[in-house]
Image (cartoon, rainbow, N blue to C red):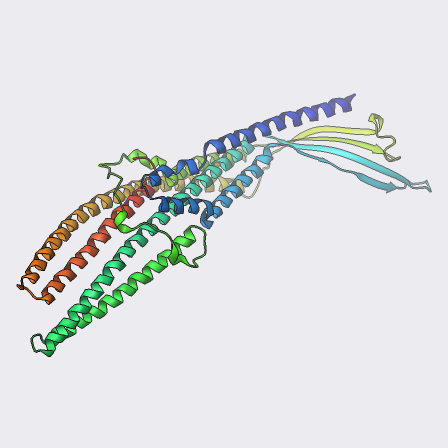
Length: 451
């Protein structure tokens, strides 16, 4: 009768602990479903750029980028570590088969024995120590998910910046080719004028140097673009082969569809994964301190054993030949060489580090947002000023063309005016492209928040 009660008690313990485990796991899945990382990235922000080619690259990066896959695997690893720690809250159950052959004193014959033990071992978490350790790992899992989100934002921003830099270089190379043509014409004219004694040799040498420099500059631009081609391929999870065939929008088709915000509320830093991760780290280290304090309390274990023993194999596996044990014990270590004290001090130190890290991240986040907004505003103002200069140069070149037709100025003077116009256009192109790149920098600084 006592064995039956023992078995029933063990089964009750197992039942309630399994119910608890299933509840915790269901809650975990619910949280993971609600906190889908992709849904927090504000993909609509990229759609508002009205560039389906760039949007396609962004989607490919989300699906195929190896850094993002690695970040996802690290999150999976943290989740399994969390499950590993959680297993300490549940009982361990085992069953075995122990066949044996024995001989008793005074008896010539040997006998056989088979035992089928079922055992349960459970650390009664009366003080919540194991639960605290599980909570700490829950925070680590949340931090891992936030780090994964940060990786997504970083990769998407890198794709956008690389793409716009390629578009910018396309335009710069096109203008540079025109500059080479103009400088070649200038050199040919100065060489001809030098032969006629109209222009000095020094002017001819200077024109030749400018022409050679233009050829060198275009090579630098082409090398930079080739590297960006390769970078974009890697970011989207592809090999750099035939990267020059990458599709992209024409620079002249770029349109500024986003307004520059007048200011950004500092509360937006709460959307940044590094800021949220710093908060979670404080919570995690605080829980670690609680768990470290509870290490000084007794460890309470409950042990249950139910074994069926028979000398005739399975023929007599009944309650008469069974053995049941239910026991418990409390252990309080009296001396551990100062290990528990040191462990507590370590966790307190980590807590202080987490607070300082949180303060640093908060200040750095605000700085990065302000820097990105400042660059966006000032670079746009700079572009507008350069655009005014470019329009003035266009008007000047137009008047110079009329003067050339009327014979007031020479062809050499007209070519030099065109060279100045093209150089000014290059500056306008760079600053116009910086507007789009700075928009992406602001998107990254606010972690995709709607502003």
